[in-house]
Image 1 (cartoon, helix red, strand yellow):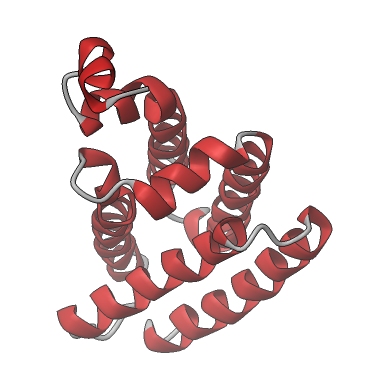
Image 2 (cartoon, rainbow, N blue to C red; image 1 turned 30 degrees about the vertical axis):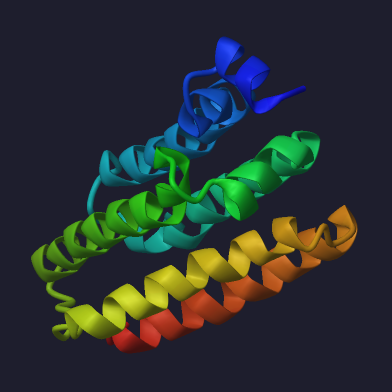
Amino acid sequence: MTTGAFYGYYKSKEELFEALTGRHYDYILTRFKKAQQEFAELPPEQQPEVMSDISGICMFDILHYAYAHLPECKLILCCSEGTKFSGLIDEMVEIETEGTHAYQKVLQELGRPSPRIDPALEHILITGMFHTFFELIIHEMPLEDAENYVREMRSFYTAGWMKIMGQ
């Protein structure tokens, strides 16, 4: 197909990406937002008990979805520069950061205050967490290995966040 023929179908790279990956991008973000909302709606006294469980279920759901739609998800992660789709991780980082701050308020209400987390460090850690997760998809790890890595990554990040939050 020539470039001219391509532009007869799609006006831009973004429009092509929307056609190829839009629903997959939306699924990942919607699933992640849903997990955050489910957690936030729990009674405060339950949140510390189930924090890791809800996030774990969400990450496994996203992992399995991404593996079921690997070509499209890899396009989002590897080839979306110059489109809104390149901001997937940034959007997830923003959502997670807001969720972290809300959880810190819950801990405060429960009499278990969390020390202030430097915003730059918080951003780096959350961004690194999502990049680590999406590396499994980018490198097409065998699904069984990816599932094991997610379990280990969750243990690692949960322990780290608990330490930083003084819990």
